Length: 195
Image (cartoon, rainbow, N blue to C red; front, side, top):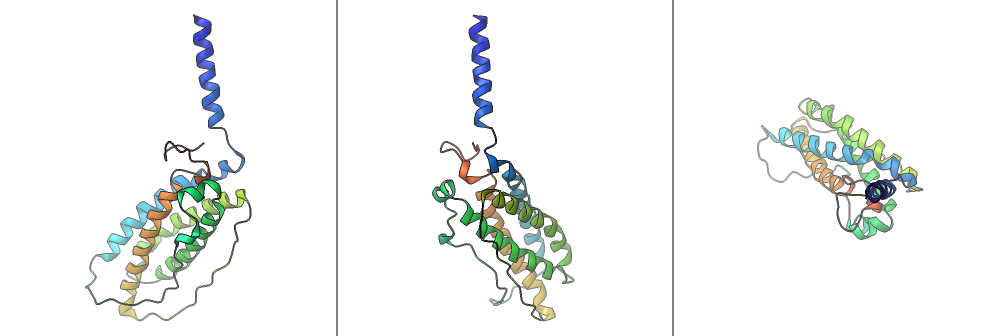
């Protein structure tokens, strides 16, 4: 009886260890889980704080050159399981743009406090996602230049809020895609476990 119990325990340990064993590039993707959730938390807080004290205005049009996620970016669950690099590449490009814009609004007097909270977190997520994507292969790195435009003083608090609000929306998306680790290794049974 003791032998069958020992065999059962050893078998269980072997199979649980084997299913959690690193699969090459998977080790490089561990940090995206926590950094994507951290960006979401910070982005939400600064978006709400930046909104305080703003006088409601008519729809103000901003030309921020934001890069948007689209349905063709292949970030749906089915495609992510098969080939996650196109989605990771687009996430990195969008993060690049937000990093540039957050750096820019950090120079605004009423926005520097909020932007300073976001900068280290967005930089960490960018580093983590890039490391993960690099470990998987070529993902199409591209430099995106942001043109410098003079912003009227009255527009700066609204632009600050606009960018932080959009960043919060994007952080929700990235947290959903990345908070469970490498999407290519998600099991069908749960979104909380990766193989």
